[in-house]
Image (cartoon, rainbow, N blue to C red; front, side, top):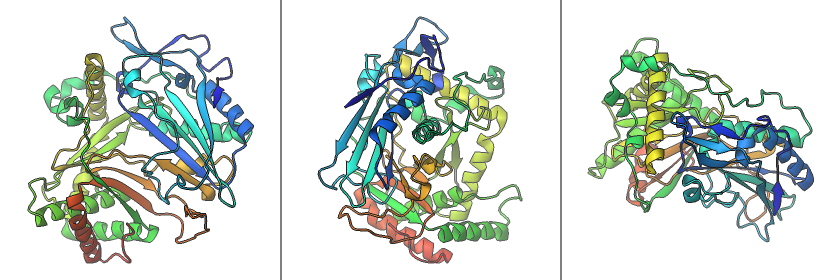
Length: 459
C-alpha cells in the first residue's frame, strides 16, 4: 500500500472548501474505471505522476461535507488527504480481464464506502489499485474507484489522460480544470411546465430502490466496423425510402444500434407473451459539454434525452424517435430547463438522505453511452493498440452501456497469445432477466439477418 498526496500548491491554492453544483449530488454512485496495458508499469514513475495529477484534481483528496450556506449546502472540504494505492502481484491469471470493456466481477480497484460518503464521514473519495500479472510478456492493470459526485466519465477520462502524460514526463496539452461552474439562466424555466419537466426524469423522482437486485444475466454484443457501417446505411436508406421524416434526421450509429437492440427486446417479450413489454421509452444519458455548458465544465455535466416510440417493433421508426429525442434535448432553452430540473431533483434527494432509483421500468430502456469517448488516449506510453479500457455497468435489466471496442486482447487467462479479430467496432452491454435471454438473442439474430447485414453478431 502506498499513500500519495498531491504536490502543493494545488490548482485551488489556499481554498479550504469547494461548493458542489446540485447536479454533482450523485451521492450513491461510484465510478469504476481502469486500464490493461501490455507491459509493466514503473511504480515510482506512476506514484510521481499521480502526485502531479492530484495537484490538478485536488477534489479527489477532499471529503464530502455539508455547510450552512442555503445556496450551496454541499461541498468538498479541501484537505489534501493522501490517496491509497494498492500494488498487487497476481499469483495466477484468474483476475486477468476478459476481452471486453465491461468486467464482471470487478477486481481492478478497491471499493469505496458509499454509505459513509453519503453521510459525510471522513471517508476517501478515490482509491486505486495496480495489479501485475504473471503473463509472458507481462501485463498490468491500473484502476480507480471514485465517487461520482466528483466526476462523470468525461471528467475521469481527463484525469486519466493527465496521469498518462505525467507518467511519460509530457506536458498536459489540455486546459487544467479551473473548477469554475458555468451559470445557467433560470428564466428558461418560465417556458416550461414544472411537472412536465420533472416527468422527463422518472429515475430522479423514484426514491429508495430495493437493495435486492434481480437475478439478471449479462449480454455483451460486439459489432465489427463493417457491421456498424452497414447497419447505419441500411436504416438510413429505409428511412429515405419510407419518407418518414424530412432531411433533418440523420441517424447515428448509436441510434441504429440502440433501435436494433430495443426492438429485439420488444419482439422477444411479445413472443413470450410477457406483460413487461414492449419497450416504448428509451432514455439516453446526455453529456451537456459543448451544449449549454463549456467543454471544460468540471465534475458532472449530465442530462437525459428521452424517446417515446409509437412503433416499438419497427427498427427504423424507433431509430428516428431516438434521433428526434436528441434534437429536442439539445435545443438550448429546453436543455437549460432540464439541467435546472435535474439539479433540483438531485438536491432534493441529497437533502432528504434518499437514494434515487435507476431501475428501468418494464417498458423502458436506458443507455449510458461513452461511445464517443477516447478512453485509450490514456495509454501511458504503451500506445493505444496495447491499451484496453475497463469499466462496469449496473445489473438492472435493460440498463446498457456502449463503447468503442478495445483492441484485440493478446493474452487470455491461460496466458497464451491470441489474435482472433481485427481492431475497431463497438461493444454494447446490458443485463436481462434469465428467462428473456434466449428469446432476445433469437429475435436479434433474425432481425440482423432480415436487414441483410453481413456476418453474425458476436455475443
